[in-house]
Length: 293
Image (tube, rainbow, N blue to C red; front, top):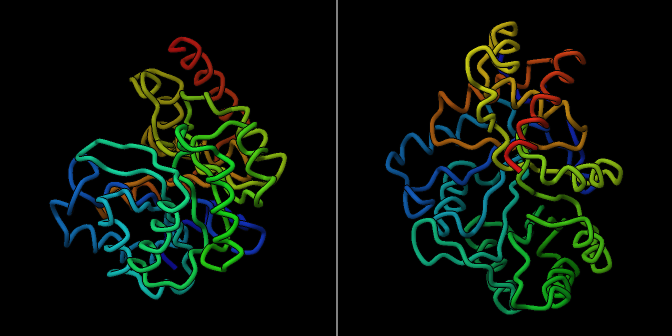
C-alpha cells in the first residue's frame, strides 16, 4: 500500500451495497479546454487514471457530457474492466461547444444517453447513473419515470441526482431510491447546507463538486493558512480535509489532469483535523459565505 492512500478517508456504502473509499476522483478535467474534446496531454491523463487504483481511489465520477464522450472513453481505455472500482457517470446535459451546457431531459434522450454510456464504458449495467440536471422544459415526473424504468431493466444499478433541492430529492424518491446527490459545496459555498443535512440524516451519499475552493480564506494569515502551516499541508488539502470531516456521507471528487496534483489531493485523506480547528474553519467559511451571499 502506498503511504498516500484514499483509504485513509474512511469508507461509505453507495446504495447500501457498494463500498468505496470516501475520497474519490472527478474526471471532468481529463478533457480539453472548456471540458471539450481530447486533453492537451493524453499520455498524462492516462497515466493519472492508471495511478488512481494505486492510490486507493476506487470511486470515479464522470459524465457523458465531458468531452462529450472523451472522459468515459479515456476511463475505459485506462481502467476497464474496473475491478474493485465504482465508475459513476451522468447524463442529461448536451454540449453546444466549449463551456456550453444545456439540460435535455426528454425520456427518449435519457434512454439514448444511458445506452451510449454503456457502450463507451463497455459495461452492461452502470453501477451509479446520475441525472446531471433536471430539465426545466420537461416534466420532472417524465424524467424520473424513465430512469426508474431503466433501473428495472437492469441497465442502471443505483440512481443519483445533481444540483437538486430537498423537495426535488423527495419527489424523485417516489420513483426510485436516491443513492447519491451531487451539489456544489465547499468550505465557502454553503448553498446546499440543507441538502447535505438531509443526505446525512438519510444516509444518502453527498458528492460535493468543486470541493477545494477556499477563496480569500487561503490568503496568508487566515485561519485556513494558519491551520495549513500547523498541519504542514496546503490550504487546498486542509479545505478538502474539512469537507471530509463535515459529514460521514461526504464523497468529495477533486479533479485534475495531472499525476502530481492527484497525489497532492489524495494526501489530504491522511489529514485529521481537531474538533477545534474544524470549528474555526467552519466559522470562517460561514462568514465568508454570508459576505458573498
